[in-house]
Image (cartoon, rainbow, N blue to C red):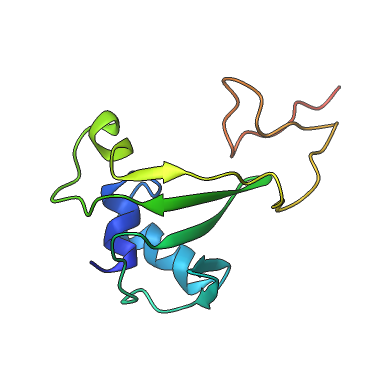
Length: 112
């Protein structure tokens, strides 16, 4: 299965075109190799390194999804691996993107 389709089916990307943009940016790794092609094939047992907000998520592919189903179904297709050794950027004390209920696109409020 194509990586862009896999990211969309497993709900890591909100749309297939967003998944294509994400892969084309070149920050993603498949089995340790940087990929830039949306047509890169994902197979059972592959390891994906995905930059997400202020951290890096590492997953192992357990199943190739047949459709874009609910999140619970999508979560059965991969296993989160220990990503303690990976970091996309140090967390910002001024604007924690990973705070519960925080939108990744939210802007900090300005004091006026």
